[in-house]
Image (cartoon, rainbow, N blue to C red; front, side, top):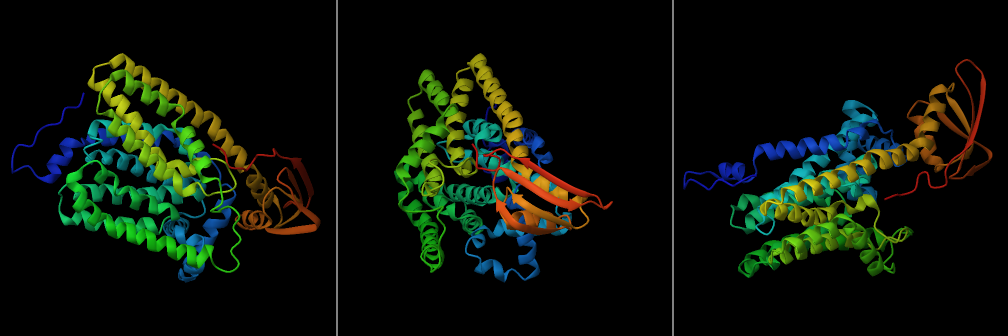
Length: 452
């Protein structure tokens, strides 16, 4: 069991105190766990949007990045575009490299969940168990395994870093922490539209301590103002602009129902198990961590409750909210540890690990491979062809299948009567020996939809 070592006096530096509160052995355990859990993802091929967005990032880089600014959708994911262009330029168009980058970013995010223990309401022990759960929880796997969803990792990476630096400053640390919080928040703004959730969450520690109200509200004001300006700019330049027709988003969406269903889905089953453990261990102050975790989960889910294509928030978009769930589970594990209920703690950890890994390694990885099948079929046809593939029936958008073929140096030609059908793959090409190949097959109807 970890027992914090008290400061030895004025000679103890801030770095020494940090090492005592967050021992390197635990950092290493969490980092290794986060890598190990997603090692199977390194063998997953590119999936649909990867073939569109990575070449587009390459194109933006070649054009000096100005076209990115005028792209109303992708400019909100500038850090992802920069990362994709950099990886593509240095390592080439290789799935394993992009997957490895996502796995490493996720590992850093796990360490940031551990660092959230700087807030006294959480503490180091709870934060350690929370980070361990965050590392293995399968619910947000799509953000890690699908390179095109890396924006959710990056907004969390920078947004959570900003929040932690702000909490450090709020609790009396030097102004350099506040400057770091501002810098990290600006990077978060360039990562995804959901960044404004972190601006609101800056007030979370303030709500739990009246002594911090004046400093907290004053310090949070620039984040809130920046987020408000960003939302207004996005609305006026994109949503309210002429020609906007993105039916995936609407203020008339049943947002409250989506929020409640998504919150329930997020809590089930580990959140409810954690609540049961907290009630069993009977520590009166645990209502505070329950409230804090709930506020975080709701704030993390709310930006996505105006989507129209699903009645609950898709898995990749729960990445921010899962940190709140992790606090709840971490508190439950910390109470079991603190009350020396070692058998219960071991059983809870074993079941949580086994169930999440079984879902992630067996069910989810199979889904990702199935989801990648249409693009893999086109890629193999392009590699085997003499340079031209005639498409009769396409399970993907026509521009996506064209990009897949371009990635292996082949050209797409759409036959007269061509149709786009998510369950149909039919192509014709001559292989390098001059033989005519006519391939046709039926695919599953839900093969490349969003899943949980």
